[in-house]
Picture 1 (cartoon, rainbow, N blue to C red):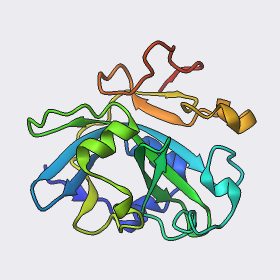
Picture 2: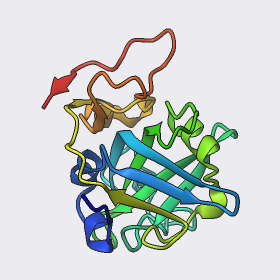
Picture 3: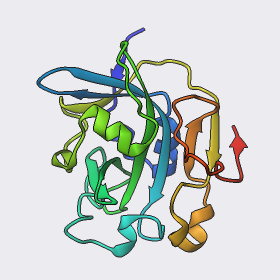
Picture 4: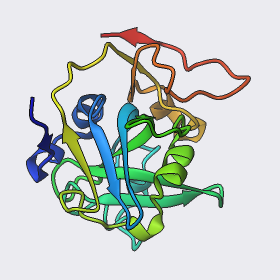
Length: 196
């Protein structure tokens, strides 16, 4: 069965819809030295200005202008002064929505720990230099190889206790019981697990 590359229209959907649908898709980064391929197993949706966990809640700034732009572009930012996090702009232009890629399973006999958004970007060599990159281009892109989607679970997002009532919104999607799904050592999984 042939694979198909995700197009602009695939990204121009609400972030919660896209976040769910990206589970099982393949993320590819072509570098001068090699091609990195990984199957996405965990995502989080950020729903724009009303969502207090989203950078878009601060409005249109120099940092967030990409979020408010055309869907299908990369939004990469630094967290804790250590980790670059890779997001995909979603929804319609001006909506400020995005999907965070939290974890993936390495492919093609490549050995890497991609269980967490910081580990994923480090291993796949995705950095803030890719902020604003068009994900329908030839450097970083996504494909659908039409593999049947895995069973999904939904929980609240991780690490957003500051987001008031939004911290409990069920906007984290992951492949149920997949070993590559991220987690915090020594802390329980988020509550309100739902199986689809």
